[in-house]
Length: 310
Image (cartoon, rainbow, N blue to C red; front, side, top):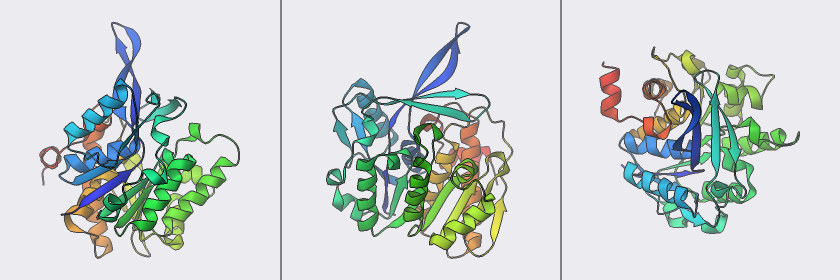
């Protein structure tokens, strides 16, 4: 088994909570790619996180958390900035994120900061999420994507509050098309699909991304499971029934589980293999939804097997 490189953001989430009858925020270490890296590690995969951390106490806390989770930090850098915050509010299990902090501590990794040997030696490379909206990290991701001899996986993980002006969505579509064109796997949520391509059904979005060049596309549908496009047909994989309390990190856990499976067994040789992988990833996500928090809720393989026997 080789290792994965996950390139993206790490920050601190402030999550809605209550203390002594009053609304408060509960601090949690987060960022979509960080969640992905932790999910890979908890599922037994060897993973390196590549990104930028603030030079404050919160940045040190993120480093310590990843180290304790078994995530390698050889490609991470510390930058002179306060750690960015993502404030999450809930109207249901799905969180709405608003981001605070300038300069953004997670968006200061440039192409010259890349550990080229680390990226070139990886068996799986993940790029995606909100860092692609910032030119320095987008340039770093493009460089990593171009030099990787690995399986390349991509997740746009769109956050509407960060898109800015009216032209930003079109620019993001161009970036998505660029990475999807040479991706072995694209994972996105139905919310991502609706925002990026509002005139297309999710099945059409999956087919379009495959036409661009993506070998396999997985679209998560929340409680309705996922769509898998690994051949001409687009098939649905059901999600297990769970008592969801907090969906923070659920989509990231699907990505992490798929990367862990790629590390363990390589790329599936047929669509049936992909459906089995996605079914496992949805069980991982179901368990995440039953626990509060994002990265801290990522389960081990033993926990998944115990929760969903057989």
